[in-house]
Length: 186
Image 1 (tube, rainbow, N blue to C red):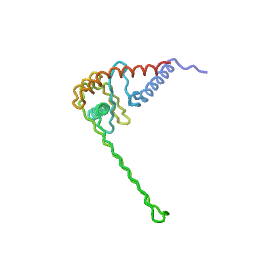
Image 2: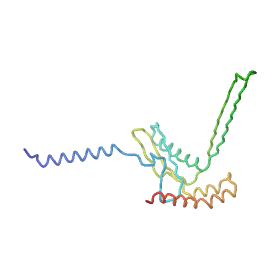
Image 3: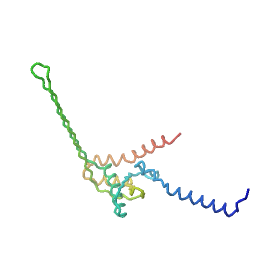
Image 4: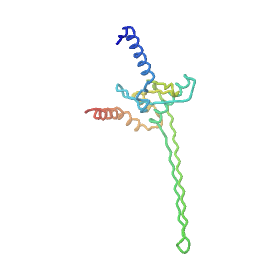
């Protein structure tokens, strides 16, 4: 059996290495928050919104649209007005000999949701682009202190509700952190 020259082995190993590098970069995986829609930052108490947009070729416009949609997610969590209406009608009519009946029913359901508030201190913290599908994803963050300031300045909440939210916001996040630690413990 004839031995291959050392140089041939090195070139073959380099080609295998280049192919592996190319294959790994081609299989780029999206961040976990893109798949779940939830962004986790262990370092701070904050609200996060994830927004996405698809089908826009103008890249700066796509990033802006995704960021605005992420901000809208925070608004929906913090301030949403929902009106709900359901109408239900049912009738049964029996003829004279009680053998023939006519039944009818009609059900309608309508829901209207509206959210509007001024967000101060919201900033983009992460973004990702799926180039194959043309989808842009952005995560925005609003610190708990900024949320408390917003609620303090809100004219829609009465003073008792603003005080309650301010006093209990920190405790709610602390309870949430304790629950998360319980889940992580073996």
